[in-house]
Image (spheres, rainbow, N blue to C red):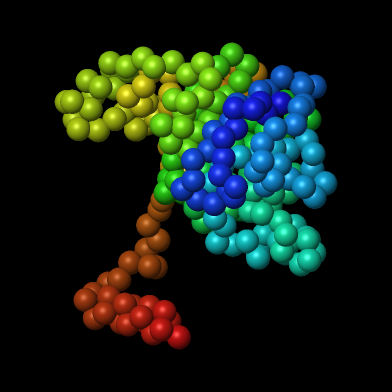
Length: 230
């Protein structure tokens, strides 16, 4: 179930605060109890609930791939579109997305939660485990407002920040103990107390895109400017 800890604005566009308590127990499915109509898919997937910030750049391609009628797609929020994409591709969903996103999705049929950040981590996604639940939020202030959130200093992370002026990015640790940031280009899957995180994207350098000399660089820049103006 998605409990009443969801706090959202009237619409679910990027950079707006969000938080949710997502429970992974089988057979426990209750309405989310929020005014945000795009939190749960409204077009045939009552077992999937989604919360987060998302702006899809390949929305039309997804609509076409999923076979959603234009009339339906016009009233289908990006979050609802994610629910349909998850139903189609499952854990391979992130590889199908382009844009800015940080979201968490609960599948009540399988009793699991999937959370994901975009390739560059342009939007934050914080999480913490609370028993059989996964608590997610889009920023620390909102996370600290969630029920039962501990307010304990992470001394190890503070020491690393003092020594190296940075936090241990690989572990996703924050200055608040027990709260973690999902790394860029990562997917989190949890079922009960089992929580796994993996990277779905690693940046690579394509040799055919590397300019060989200064003249080629100028020509590539010129082509980009011409394309942009047209």
